[in-house]
Image (cartoon, rainbow, N blue to C red; front, side, top):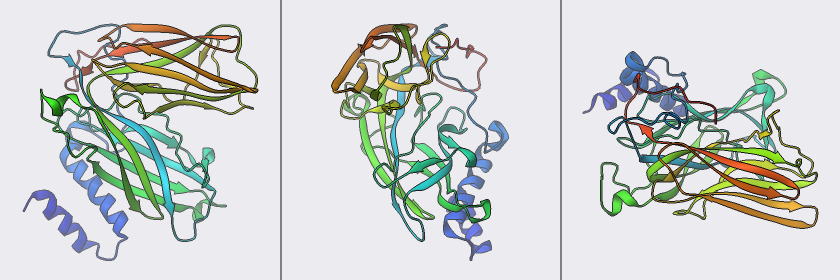
Length: 340
């Protein structure tokens, strides 16, 4: 019997009456600490590896490479149980962990005083990450999820979800393949995980031979069009039916724009096949006029690419910072990236 299985059995013996979801998460945490704490530190630590590691300073072969990475499309509260009723004010953390540093790569994080309100018609978490593309060097990712529902006072808050698990994205993927069909086909899958008072549905994909793409959008002419409602989304040619939401804008909303014209996106980092194509799409309505604008990018191993995009009288420049993945971490060969 493996050491991990023995540890799990011992934990169950010492906590026979403990909530099974809490016991499972405790095992997940203790197993992580047993494997990684000595080298990587705290279980709660977030990844220190930034996006765009090699955008401006490409390195020699053997330090970086196109790699399989995970594209996270959505996290949905599929079902709720017990005395929960829609709408829900949700806060907490959803993170993914990969082989590079095993730390939390945050894809959703809200404090209690800044909840996201979910309703039955739109039960999707507004994702703000990953901060860098999660890479599958040796095997599947792990998800680390702690979500709560806010009530009138903190003592009445409810546990919505408590999960720590290995995510086998696509059963057909051969993580060790270096050539052939298994190495060249990206894929998408959805999984449902029940814990506490909910079932979550996660939709993710494996992007093979991928390059990290960090997207920015800057207003370079005119001003933001009043009354525009729509979305900025990204997709790749291989799984073009799947979209990564970069920014959602209501007709009464105005996006946050920095002094230099840069629009604050909810998400910026995606993955694209080195042999594929990245699409950035602005779609919605401006009054009674339907807006549908799209720009295309061929991936590079480093550097930046820019394209022009226009919505009404507002001229924007979409810029993508390209970067290969580090093959190991920690390393003093990871340069500090410039802002994209």
